[in-house]
Amino acid sequence: MKWFCLVLLIAVCSYEYARTRTADQDPYLITDYSRLHPVKVERVTEGREVQQLIRILQEAKDKRLTVSIAGQRHSQGGHTYYKDGIVIDMKTYNNILSFDPSAKVIRVQAGATWKDVQDKINPYGLAVKTMQSQNIFTIGGSISINAHGRDLHNGSLINSVESFRLLTAGGEIKNVSRTENKELFSLALGGYGLFGIILDVTLTLTEDEVYRMTTEATSVQDYSCYFKENILLDGSVRMSIARISVAPEGFLTDMYAMNYRKDPGLPLAEHHTLKEYEQGVIPSKIMFHVNRSSDWGKNLFWSTQKLYFNSQQNVIVSRNNAMRSESAFMEYRGTGTNDLLQEYFIPVDEFAGFVADMRSVLLQENLNLLNISVRFVQKDEEAVLSYAREDMFALVCLFNVPLSDKEQAKIKPAIQKIIQEVIRHRGTYYLPYAAYPTQTQFQTVYPRQKEFFEGKDRYDPEHLFMNYFYEQYRGDGNHE
Ligand SMILES: Cc1cc2nc3c(=O)[nH]c(=O)nc-3n(C[C@H](O)[C@H](O)[C@H](O)COP(=O)(O)OP(=O)(O)OC[C@H]3O[C@@H](n4cnc5c(N)ncnc54)[C@H](O)[C@@H]3O)c2cc1C
Image (cartoon, rainbow, N blue to C red; front, side, top):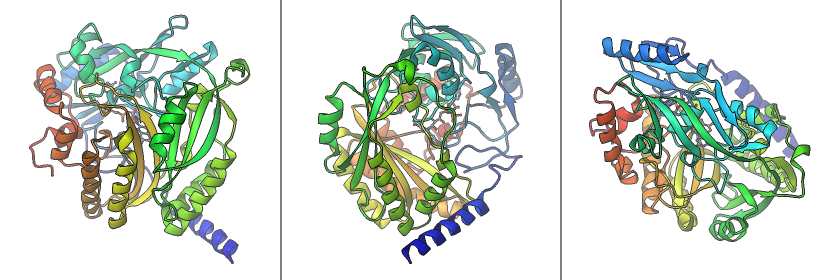
């Protein structure tokens, strides 16, 4: 009977999944990964070369239009477009300009992706220091949100940036580094496209290495101690990611940690070939849809994940491959709903207390939480809008949400309640996601926001570069 129910559920979910697949976005409107707030823009123009970009800025000024800058548009709060403005799509501005393997330095145009970088450097035994958990994102988009990932020792992405060239609102090209135009270094890295077009970036690299990945069961209660004693103190652990159960059985208490230990006994030459394709995407998608659909499905999905986690012992993987993580199974195109991210950064010692308080909020609110992963980010004092004022755990929460205005109006206060708990635990939240937090919450979490917006006024007094992040949080003060 149990098996019959399981097969029936999977069949219904597969049908539902296929039925709700829909075209991404209305072709006459633009939005981003979130599919929230579609607007009409003047046009989307592909970035091709510097003189063309300078001409676009001049045209925008002459016609009193705004300019927004887009990479893969995986940010989710209208950071890459603005109504009636010009959107510059930088994906086509993507050459690798120079690469010096002995100095471990690469210079790339901003529209290149991490995959482009990995493909270039992998044959030389080199790897990226810090990037997201996937390699699809553009370098310009990644440094403009100051990304982070599974790496434990290289900090957020700003640490890997040596310099970049910025095309400013005045049409000038500025070299920006820690010594030249250094104020812009801290503003435009994590600057959400508001200070100019990042043309090209010089990144420092590290050695590719071979890791032995093992998975261990832990719990929310024990995780901070477990992490400090077994992960941080063990210098051989180079990368780590943990998952918290969102199933009703073990809700926000059970955890699994996946740790990547360097194994110098394993020769890189035997393990460095880059994997190109994800395996088992369709069955994983169906199981994830089961997780999306009901509490029963969540219990089933977590039980299946536990079997998988327990089987993941001594998996041998190169650093470059561990950073090309598999995620296609999470891509979702539901009609009228979407899976959206929210991310909270919590000081290491506050972790268990915060998760317990978030659990209380979630038990009262009607939010469909699909997944929480936990990574570690080192303190960063360089970026003006730094999210890591001390060493933090980053809790990436994936929610399935309805997209209608009416339903979104219910999601917003629920997320704001979670943010209150974040604030009580000295935490911060990530800015590339939907603008649910209030302006007051933003100002509390980002005390240097005043400096950020004053910098914007100085470097772009006519507000040529514009997006909805600016409008929501600089705004008119009414965004509560
Ligand atoms: C499924 C998913 C997984 C994610 N995983 C992670 C993760 O592991 N770690 C993490 O830190 N974040 C993560 N994010 C968050 C974040 O949205 C992405 O890292 C991201 O969007 C960056 O790349 P992009 O090319 O999509 O940038 P976009 O979203 O296109 O742009 C991001 C910002 O950068 C600006 N920008 C883009 N190019 C330039 C340029 N050339 N010059 C100036 N400004 C520019 C844009 O205006 C915008 O404000 C994830 C998001 C999703 C949807």
